[in-house]
Amino acid sequence: MAARAVLVLNAGSSSIKFQTFRIAGRGLDVGLRGQIEGIGTAHPLATMTEAGEKRERKLSSAEGADMRGALVLLAQAIGARAGELDIAAAGHRVVHGGAEYARPLVVDDAVLAKLDKLVPLAPLHQPHNLSAIRAARQALPGVPQVACFDTAFHRGHAQVAELFALPYEMYEAGVRRYGFHGLSYEYVAATLPEAAPEIATGRVVVAHLGSGASLCGIKGGRSIDSTMGFTAVDGLPMGTRTGQLDPGVVLYLMQERRLSAKDIETLLYKKSGLLGISGVSNDMRDLLESKAPRARLAVDYFVFRVARETAALASALGGIDGVVFTAGIGERSVEIRRRVCEGLAWLGVELDAAANERGGPRISRAGSRVSAWVVPTNEELMIARHARELLGL
Image (tube, rainbow, N blue to C red; front, side, top):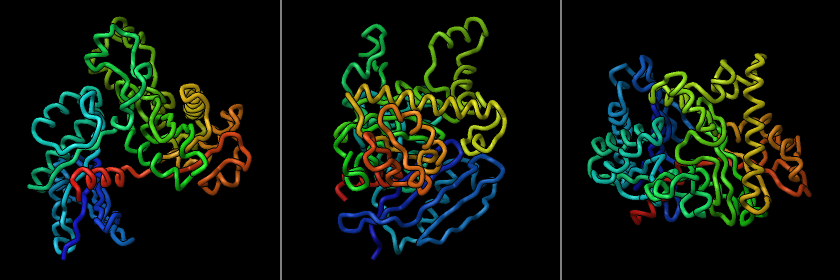
């Protein structure tokens, strides 16, 4: 008898990550997982892992021409296991839910139309998230498609944390600070009682550091404030995104440099951040290995901003009990963790160098007034949990 399962899709501009989770009693067991990358390029590649066995297959340009083709391949791969898996739901990461959507929901045409209107607020992500939903609806007819929003975990912030100092009617119209990476933060918050019980109910700053980067201040398991705002270009510097920027710079670029709105969007989202400062790469690994002065400057700036914004969130929380590192850079970069913790020594973080080299989970010394931790995130499992709960599977 086929096991009921939840399929989770996390779509980017040229790739789609996927996992299947078998419903096992009250738990969820990972089944098939992998990604199709290079979608729309000359060299698309499918990678799948099951039971610890990894397989790669180079795709033809036609097979990986677009998201729809990638989803057809994925449906075929799952269909080949029809005797083993019964896909009961497909869960999707959707970056922006706007002011209306504060919890997961089943997607229909009306929901898709509303989410389309939010594309300008997350142009790097939202179009691809929605493209995957549309493709999955065609490839898996009759299977409920569940949207899980990166903004949802941050809903419920105090109004002062949501406001911009603009005319109030703009706030009422939805121009407010939303926050992102919420699925990652929600997973980490749910994991802390087991991974770091001494800070699970306390005041914690979680650092989601990857190509996209942000910080979240969490108190008692709830989001209190975040570095990201109206869009996912705010806050910390990222791989290619600026992070926090004086809005007067945008006016200058428009009025004096004669850049169009599209030019500015490309600049802020694709040509700035670590890539813009370094001129070398948007990948932290490349920058840490580089001897180029601007590569070192990009790393210095990143560390400076992470430490600075951690202190700001400590103020919003009314103090701080712990710092948690997660996501690609946060989980893997010994050097970035070390340097951030050194920048927070004045707050009471005392790094344990050996523990940091091991990757934790605790990387601060015993007795450190503010403890530091490494907790791997798992957005896909969080999405699967939401889909299962929503549909009562």
